[in-house]
Image (cartoon, rainbow, N blue to C red):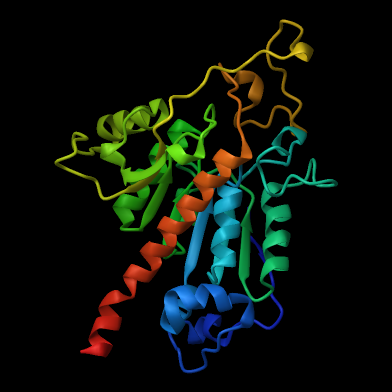
Length: 300
């Protein structure tokens, strides 16, 4: 499937393909005044010229993507095969009235374009996996945010980014948590208490040749995780003793459905959102750090 480009009106000259690395025509728009006062003109110039790839536009990824655009990232690619479901409304930014049944990337893309019409938003409605990895990663983004909740896909993405030398920020499990103050950032090797990330590390070692995960041999993969143990889901009256029943608009989509999950954990926007915002913060640090050698050379 080809990507969808949502054109911006008045694109920053520095984002044109021919001028991507040119800074002579830089001018800060007032919408980024407050961000600029944190990172300065040079920092904003770097963000405007950066391309972020967010894979998984759900309870974590939607918040991460919006925060990146509000921070001034000039090009963003959204990857998700899913459609908006009514059950997304409690935690996903694109889940609003009239959006149910529409592709998440398209609804989110329109939202991001409204936030910053000058941002180049690319929408890829596809599932990340071994068969789509080459097409999605070959654009060489400046940073990748992994907001995937599928173990095989997540593991493949981490290994693929490592092989390509692409900067990556990983999100751990946000489901079953209720306390956003328990979030931390650590190397993937140092995370404890997250069963999903533990399984991810195991597959990376077994299938992709990663070294044993110890605090003394970090993998260099910043990871947002929670110290809070996941809570078991609570049965609801309308379950009628039969457990969760999927009401997603796409039904059986050939990838995975809610009905096939062994457990459907509870979620809260104040936790998934915190994960997404923390991922965006880590990604912005990665982008700004990449400019440090040039900055130091200019100042010497």
